[in-house]
Length: 244
Ligand code: HEC
Image (cartoon, rainbow, N blue to C red; front, top):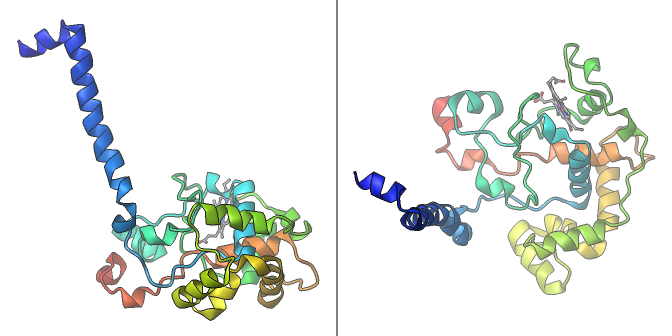
């Protein structure tokens, strides 16, 4: 009876509908105001180095996220397959995040360190070289395209604008030394972005061809940096540990 009186009174129906939507909206939006307190910090998480950042751009450009997610969900089967479930803090510096939802291929959130650089390079050029039954497309041009690092400074500044702690002043640099250690702080210094990018590529030798700085260097550096920043032995309470 009461329902009928609401449904036959357009004004009342509109007002009550708005009230219900407002409650739903508040429940979704209000926690975002407290996001700093909601996301527990995790030791070891640091922003991407310039080379990894370019690799991430290429990952987006090539649409790897069409087939790969980057979020291990807190379920037993996922933890057994991929490792500890993803923490919010691990995506802290991802703008935009690349969690994805489509898994034609496996989740890549913890792929860093799972394979050698050489395996990843062969797999990128033509996945069937190492996984005969693979349906993943090859990306052989990454091996020949020189890495365009011309706008790395602008890219880092843009991320700094949305809160990623890259440094550009001596004070910011010092703060990063305290937070991430000296070696990482140097990597996160915008003033030396290009030099750092080239140095990491040369030292890491990601594509097996030290003479050329290619897009493959950047992509492999990025993949190898995924999901191994947090030392989960220190955290002990995760599903992964409990299930084992
Ligand atoms: C059409 C869907 C598709 C696209 C697009 C795709 N992949 Fe894959 N990927 C797969 C499938 C399926 C597998 C599993 C078979 C294999 O290992 O090749 C896979 C496997 C992988 C693996 C091995 C993961 C593991 O844990 O064994 C990596 C690394 C990877 N892909 C990276 C990439 C990157 C980087 C890109 C973008 C340049 C990309 N993939 C684009 C489908 C795709």
